[in-house]
Length: 592
Image 1 (cartoon, rainbow, N blue to C red):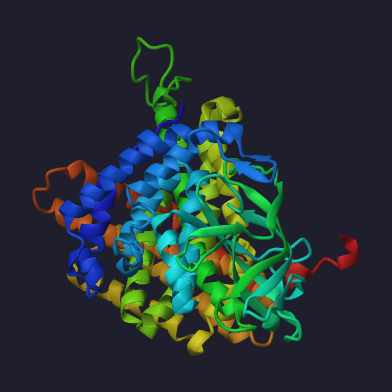
Image 2 (cartoon, helix red, strand yellow):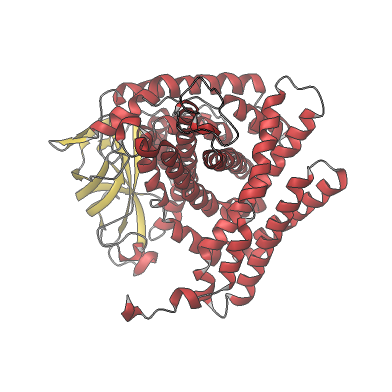
């Protein structure tokens, strides 16, 4: 059985030495002291190790069952969810006004990584609920907030998002679900939604569906879509669940992974719904939930990679195969641990460099979410919008790759289910698809986020990176083996931006043909910057007398690997971007 070890030392390093939360201008971050965060993260890690991880494989094997219109989650899931709810984990980073603990998203992200590493399928139930909470909080009426936010905050109710239909996924303008106005101000919702995560289950007393539908007579296409609150049980004036609404789960999808999360076909047969936000402005409101979900999906990719890496390291230490080229580690043994073979070390270092760099990048983005929420600074909001597709797509693409490579470390044992490594790979795969496929994220980055506000946000990122490099060169705080590669990667990023800006308007197909390469180029530089930040702190610590020098030495060694072996990929990505659409569209459609 796979086990999980929470990376508590790494979280302490990132929160208090790299991000220096206690010195932040954001009050919620400044309130994070090392003692409090250590206690919170230690308990969250204990739950991940003792409660969530032991249910991961059994939940995967059992899956969910649809019985008489209700979904039964795997054995142990209801008890584990109740523990999370009753101990307040669902409410950790929700507003105190609605019963939350008011902790920052930064702390929530750290807790979330551990819990998702331990059991991704189970954690999807509260994860989507937080998105529903945020959307109603941002766009709901006072009455809607009063009824729905307290139970969503506490976890007594869960939430979902209902976008996709059989004939439309990314192109939501093709939506057919309709919402007919009623005399009492409500709407009758009719239609079918598919791929609805957590759409039906036995974990809570009510499920709050956020459903996109068309009001008759509205504009065509995406401009005519509205968003509705459609609860499974209609609450009374006091917020208590009442009569069953006219909605049901007609099918559970049989999927490659996340078997223990109920992916439902939801049928709405004249269900009572309540308009959330303005008529025909549903996508504006839904993007509140989708953008939050995209960061959480990036976290899923990272978390599965972290769990798979831990398993691969344990296997590489214990599995004896062949003799090391530098000589046997123990002549009394029949073979050496595969950890001693250079190619296995390469694989493990690629995973480690991604996981630790990705963790730093994700937490810095979570801190940016806190800055936006508490300050409303348009510059911070623009930076967050720019980075969101990178967090989602880069971390899930590379996270899945890390899981594949973890499976490779196991060899044939990785291809059988008994070792558990295949589950990480299967579960991670969906993160590249839902909440907008990674190709769509790349198109969004290049087509919308780069030119937004006349390109000032990517220009600000490049300028800030250049100032960072200049400062490091002047004060010598960053080792040379970090400075040069990061400067080269940042230059490649600048060249990529310049090429897209100059060639894209005249040749949009050429620009979009290189969109995925640009997103990866950007992601590589983001992790390079994260490694540079960590290296500065580690080098400064080692210049003194730290209690655990081995931790900082390992940081520098892993960072050097990233700079020498991974970051130079930016040059390849730039070459691909500059080829334009020709190689991509050169084959005639009739030849496919």
